[in-house]
Amino acid sequence: MSAPIKQLESFIFASRWIQAPLYVGLIIAQLVYCWLFMVELSHLVTGAFGPHKLTEADVMLLVLGLIDVVMIANLLVMVIVGGYETFVSRLDLDGHPDQPEWLSHVNAGVLKIKLSTAIIGISSIHLLKSFINAANLSEHTLMWQVVIHVVFLFSALAMALVDKMMTQTLVLQHKSH
Image (cartoon, rainbow, N blue to C red):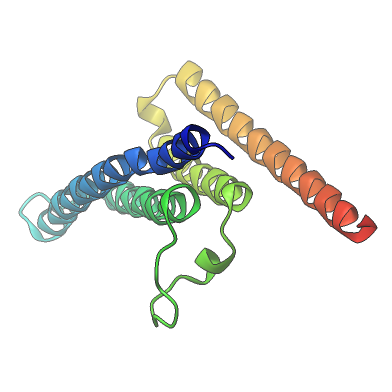
């Protein structure tokens, strides 16, 4: 192989590091979500013990908001760790006691399925919050939230089916060789 082609290929392969600052940006976004969680938690605590007591529905909405923030933070961790591992560079975590179990078999397909299920979970929390607060929302808004949630469900199902078909195809190809 000629030297210019080898240099070009090395340059193309090294370009994956352009994504590293994007993952650092997502870590900063996660810090923002941590801050938002603390702000919402303080609203819950002051509302529960302050002079103007929260109703049970208000507490439930605030707690669901906290769960929503945690689920988005979990989604960020999956994208940051899984994406970096899949697209930039291997993480040297062998033997680390805190290494996530799922990281040992992460690939683009697994990451897509995990992300889609996380998005469905987040959408479910939003939908539940909307149903609890349905008296303050229009029927049109509720309908569209349900439609969007169903689209997320079907999209995740389609991705899982495509991933399963691709995996079966790879297994069959591997067996035939």
